[in-house]
Image 1 (cartoon, rainbow, N blue to C red):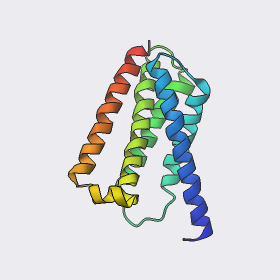
Image 2 (cartoon, helix red, strand yellow):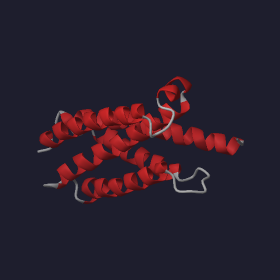
Image 3 (spheres, rainbow, N blue to C red):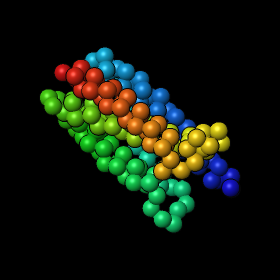
Image 4 (cartoon, rainbow, N blue to C red):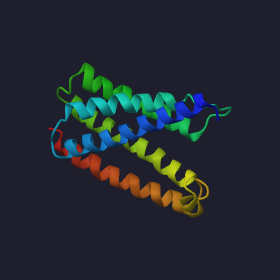
Length: 157
């Protein structure tokens, strides 16, 4: 790996981590009915940049990560319209809650996949995405985010 690609990976990982942390703070705020402006804007920017930089890695075939990245960008477009164009007016607040939580979940989905693929001890538990442990872990995350999203949706008056 060259220095440029090491730097690119580092930038992508840092963006991803900031996106995850700010997204969790954002989600916690949404669940309690609070709007933490700086955290939300940080989440939006870093999540968009994370998804975009994910396409900057060399590839020859479309991978599941590209599909998730594309879905994430589409979700983030809807979230951006709700937040920046419609200013969370009326039903747009709920649109933002749903799309914001979904974008965060997609980041966590990729995080889990990367952890299971890159950490040797975890790779033993789930050597491929077809492994039952992979599916179980992702299902638990999905259920947790469905609950988080529901609570945030109900608070998004």
